[in-house]
Image 1: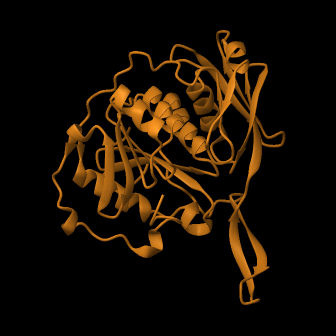
Image 2 (image 1 turned 90 degrees about the vertical axis):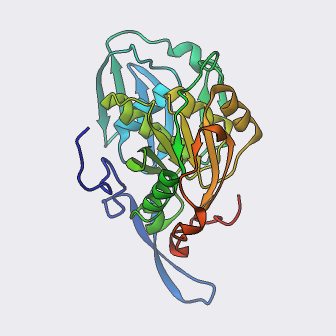
Image 3 (image 1 turned 180 degrees about the vertical axis):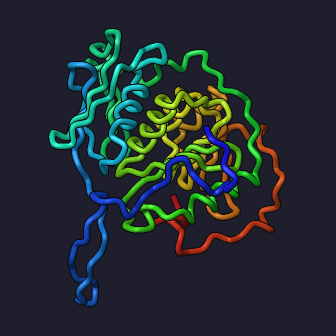
Length: 295
């Protein structure tokens, strides 16, 4: 990863003006006046592992290679020991094929799947808790000053959300530096893109922070833990099972992060309180996400 003199520079950031991500739609508002607004596109993408069709996901269509790799990795259909021979995307057929040098054990995963609570209806194949037995994440310190800095940088970065709304975002960070910012119609897709990028670039996870705009559910906690990331933060709230799992694996879990406020329900002993909330810059209302005032 290259050194960057400008600490606001991302490795990957949203490109809300890219072709095919949004379109203008005409309608009328509550006063009956004509309006034309930008809305997010939603497209099917079918993921194959070698010759086996695995799933069709609804996605905004960017980074299909990272989405496919991350989905298969997070479903534990791919492991760190698997050799990836290629990732082939066909835009016309809306398919992406991940090819490995060795055979994989996807059949057992396909026999059991669990629908999750995610937007766009997430699906988990196999045992949701597989891989968590005995897992303990690194006891990484988290500076409150870094947390505030990350939230400010992420919330003010041009994005599809600020352009059109109806989107989730996930950001991979290190200390107070956002690195990779992915968006999609479902938070699961956004996380999978991050996982796919990390797998493709062989990026270590033990010093990273994952920021998401979605709820801190059991699946979000499990995905983060299995990715090896020791800190998960969100603007949104928690589920009880998500908190329980985070405490079991040693994941620092921060929710309701808005302006100077947040709640830590796991890993409070790893927080370094080096910033005074009263001296932190207040969040500009124009950057608040829908429902930011409540879960």
